[in-house]
Length: 253
Image (cartoon, rainbow, N blue to C red; front, top):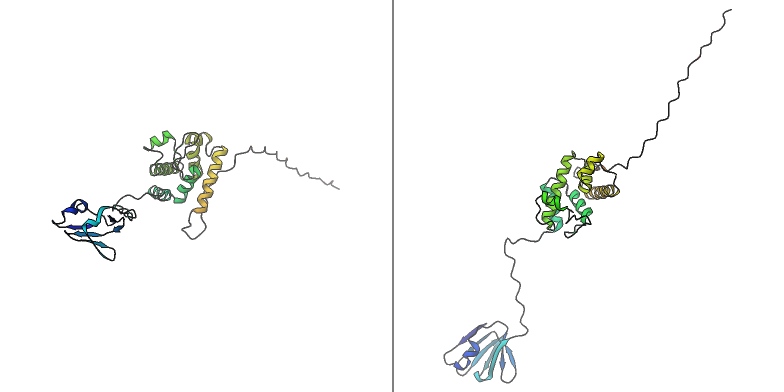
C-alpha cells in the first residue's frame, strides 16, 4: 500500500511510516475501521484512499493501523521454469520399456504382477519396490534406493531384457527366471514345475496379451505359455505280431 506523508504531519509519522499492504486498515478513535489502499496526511487532513473513492479524516481521528483480517491469500509462486515434475509410475514404465527395447505392456504386466505398482512393496522374502528386486540383485544392477520408483523400474526392465537375451527371446523362461531365479530354470531345463512360478507366468502373459496393441493390423502372435507340469508318459503297448499268410497246396490229380 502506498503511503505519502508530509513533514507537517509529525503526529502521524509513527503510524504511517511503515510499508502498507493492500489490505491494511485504519482503526479510528470512534471504533470504526476503514480498509485503505493509500493514506496521505498533512497537519490538518488525512486523505484515505478506499475502494471506489476517498475519505477525508482529521489526523486526531486515526488511532492506529493494523493488518486486515480478510486479507486475500497471496497466490502461490509459479513453479520455476525447468523444475522437475513428479512422474507417474506409468510414465516411468513406458520410458524404461523404450530404453531397453521391450513392449510397454510386458513391463507393465510384470510390474502389476510383482507389486500392483506399489513403490513401497516388500515381499516376505525381502524383494522390494515396484519390480520386487531382491537386495543382492538390486546391488548387482547398481540400484542405490530400491524404493525409488525410477531406479527400481529401470533396473527391473534391464533385468528382464538380459533374461530375454539369455533365453533367446523365450518369454516364459525369462519370466520364470525373473520369478524363481535362473538357477531354477537351469535345474529343470526350462520352466520349473513350481505352482507359484507357473501361475505368475500365466498372469503376466495374460495381462500382456490383453493390453499389447496390434501394430500389424492382423492377429497378434501369442506369447509362449508354460506347458503344464509333465506327467509320466504311458508305457507303449506291445505291437501285435504280424499275422503270417498260410498257403495251401492243392493236390495234384
